[in-house]
Amino acid sequence: MMKKVLFIDRDGTLVIEPPIDYQLDSLEKLEFYPKVMRNLGFIRSKLDFEFVMVTNQDGLGTASFPEDTFWPAHNLMLKTLEGEGITFDEICIDRSMPEDNAPTRKPRTGMLTKYLNNPEYDLANSFVIGDRPTDVELAKNLGCRAILLQDESDLPCALVTTDWDKIAEFLFAGERTAEIRRTTKETDIYVSLNLDGNGNCDIQTGLGFFDHMLEQIGKHGGLDLTIHVKGDLEVDEHHTIEDTALALGECLYQALGNKRGIERYGYALPMDDCLCQVCLDFGGRPWLVWDAEFKREKIGEMPTEMFLHFFKSLSDAAKMNLNIKAEGQNEHHKIEGIFKALARALKMSVKRDIYHFELPSSKGVL
Image (cartoon, rainbow, N blue to C red; front, side):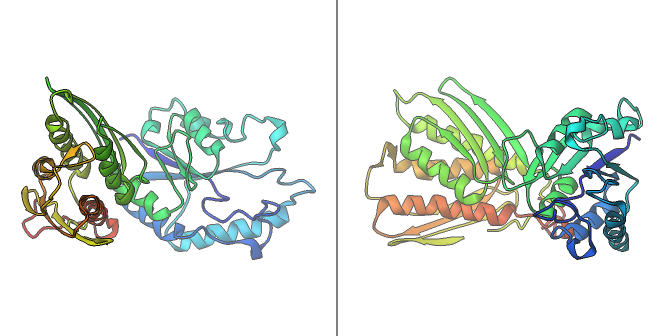
């Protein structure tokens, strides 16, 4: 069986990088990255990855960074990690300065040649974990994927996060993404979804108010959501709205995968004069209870009669039980509150606990 590797940066990834001189050259400066020990220990005990530390230590061994200031903190870090069951199969330290352009300095691969073109290693399913663009570039040079410890990034990464809980979840349970293309004589729909996203949305249905409502699902649900629709709006809005719901529901169903570890259930929220309740269950049995009435024929370009159709189609395709109630006077607030409550219900129900990675069902199947 081919071996997978986690190539792990040190400063800014395992430990906090000292903010002024960027040198961990005393015991007083040693501070571990939040939650790194619990999660690396979990990964080490549960998953089949080799651990390789890869770090640039500029000028180590020179007058500007004497070795006797480096090793005490470094060795204490290793000993502390070892006490939590975290050991490294290899530790690679480059001592060069950036201007040296040494082949061993990250993001170059000179320290890691044993892993390149080696049939023993599965680099395509290995990862570089670090906090800098050079770590992402190293992943590319190795043929791995990158996990970047930053708030956000436009770089090509498998995961961007500052939370080691998220890294462990990602490595243990995998990506929860799906992509659907649904084409009929009436509509051409593309939907992509990331359940563990950041609320990034790209919604284009041709119906402004519908776009606004669908964006609530992504923004308030913490989902990355792309929906592009070309529909027969010259006829009416029916096919565009209903087929979008079917495609989105199918994406939800696929992205949930085996559903292990999810909370499963999930929300009520007020919006000015309105109270909106959306309760759902990803139990595999579609059902819709709809208790909401609208006095206006349209809100924006969207017929109010289509709201029921949308949620019925969504429930069917996602195989979820959906119970929706709304009361209030303002029709816009009422339906927007429903979409926001749906988003929060989704966020609550798809939340995953990898430390109790069980199927949330006494039947043993969902």
